[in-house]
Image 1 (spheres, one colour):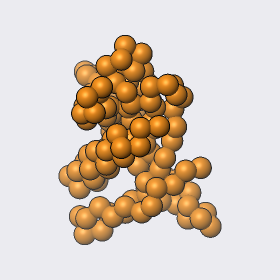
Image 2: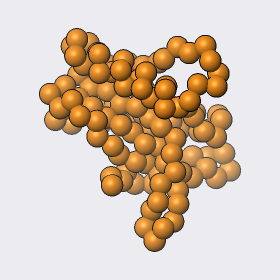
Image 3: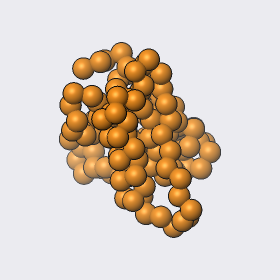
Length: 130
């Protein structure tokens, strides 16, 4: 695994999620990839339908990232999704679900970053896997 680029991509995802949460208190799924030069590339999906479900948007982002990995444009990619998770002792939390994939391991992995918004500040917890 390319830990340096993976960490760079997770940091970019975290910063973008924080900006969305600070501005709107929530966010729609978004994507990020790392190209062959190690540069962060935002991944978007153009949609005309404002009522498009998050699941369709996620599928569009997954397809774009998978295609970019297959044609060697990207070495890895990630999708950020606003979700709710169960923490210890059945305590619920808002979280950023970050789905990741990389060249050579074309299976999506999942990590979760719990968050709270207090006084318009976004406070992140520790990354979790389930």
